[in-house]
Length: 330
Ligand code: COA
Image (cartoon, rainbow, N blue to C red; front, side, top):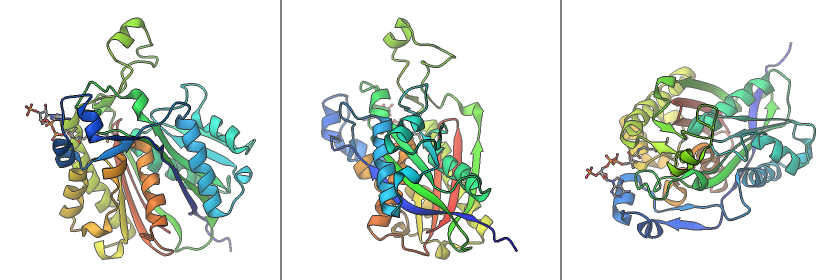
């Protein structure tokens, strides 16, 4: 009888630029202060890409590190998926730059755009492609250079965002108690303008006017996003636990999108998750959109917060509006 195949995470990698942008640095740019930012978001500092660093260079480094962590030669990778809202170029995909850098020709390569939910969306797509038998070594990468799309005169948004990349390598396994157990993906396009980069696409191509009006930067309706995020994060955790028959006790670690410490604490405390079961690094990296969950996963694995056999719940939400969750057995 044919055994069913699951997609297991066999390697974790991340890349964070070395340059730090602290709250004190932001105080010099906009009318804000460290106390307000820490209280309202939990963020103390974030990373900013240096000249020469970009979404593809950071993604390739994170991907190489995930392969090294798995003991796999990057040349053996047969699929690269990059999730990003700050791609290397609009055309071609960031994933093609990464594939070139990894030297894994002719691996399939494409980008997936689902904003802060992009990594979990990509994980779900890769899971399906591995379970179908089409691919065997798949890099799923979240990568963002948000500093290049942030308006550093807008105090409502510039305090949030940071740069970085995180990656996982997925491979097939026949062990039922390992790998991705469940994924859920949702969207509501009515909320398209909650978080939006208004210009630079076919809807509003680049012009002098769009540049003058700063329409190539991310615009965010913070308060509305806040409410949406709390509701969806709680829903995602409940849905994941119900679908897999898990109680709070059965979950070893929740790795939420690093969006805002108040959103994370509010949603997890409503479900009575002790805070030591929730991975938080927003204080050091800010909100890195699609990169936030894989960066956190790599750190959690390296620091021993997840071990073989751990049950890990992922919950993400972002522009679109989109939201997505997953349950993985490490
Ligand atoms: N420094 C100091 N004061 C600030 C400020 C800043 N950086 N940004 C806003 N304020 C002020 C506002 O002007 C407002 O002043 P007022 O009461 O005099 O009008 C007050 O602080 C409260 O503003 P508000 O927008 O209600 O703050 P908030 O508590 O909602 O926090 C965010 C703002 C952006 C931190 C919060 O809404 C948030 O995190 N939203 C989620 C956004 C997100 O993560 N998006 C990414 C996509 S997943």
